[in-house]
Length: 261
Image (tube, rainbow, N blue to C red; front, side, top):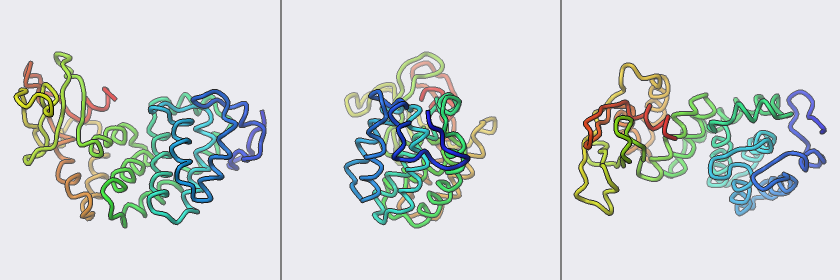
């Protein structure tokens, strides 16, 4: 298999792409999709997601594609497409199997060289974002690039407006929803079971949490962003203490969500 030299990304014309695996087998289609994205074809982004980050799973081709995603993001002008590219790159960085894929990849040096570039880009774009969803995606991506993969995975709940996990005490499914007070944990989906038992989450962060650095970073980044006012308000609750209304067990919400992701 051809290998890139030093920090040079794997050439898009290299025959080595066919030897790399993606979600569907050979990654031979990846270079064409990256070229389409460079020319502004936003539809190619969905196809690329399916190939290199299928339902959150990543592959050797994901590592090889990462520096190209960062390069294309730097070249495109459309804010939505740029945010989408950085979001996909962030999803690769936040994957629980990233270390495993890096160990098997011939493109580690190029990947590692692209991470600080991606972080600088996502951070700069985040400071100017005006769209809520793009803001959440950029916040997630920046967290992943900065090394806070666990927190980044959890932040998708702000886009879904729901966080789901199993109670660490009794195993019942809990549904954490935004409420005027912050966040509330219900023992059933509140949409279908309005009478479900609920308990308000207590604002944090929890002193013993391993996620204090992530909280400080996210709090600082969202503080001056009007489009993420609701996220900024609920971050202390996400990093706070939840209680299961079924068994009474109390736990760090961010820690439980991270282990459940």
